[in-house]
Image (cartoon, rainbow, N blue to C red; front, side, top):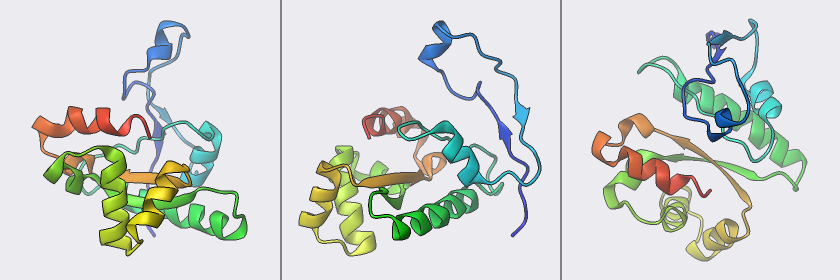
Length: 151
């Protein structure tokens, strides 16, 4: 795999905590060889990691690299959440409640019976890894972002 140059971009999204905590919003290049799993571990459970880049820059490849590493962990320890990649472009077709969409995607893309998928969602056993926000029509993007914030 080609190693991508990663950088931390705290200015990329609005952070309500910036009102309380002063942060340095300038891009911070990460050391060569930094793995996406290390960044994920550093931010901690319950936080959000946003992978940004131009089309073709390796966002999906980076997400899949993270997924591979998280699956390896989940296979070793049943207490880890189950990482699952979902493509947001299919959400835009129906614009339904995110929980319902996740259950449908688990069923249609991964052949998970709806009853099991619903249980996983209700019991918060999944770690949803969302791809393709840039493929959601611009007119629906804000609604899509608002829909995924609860997960």
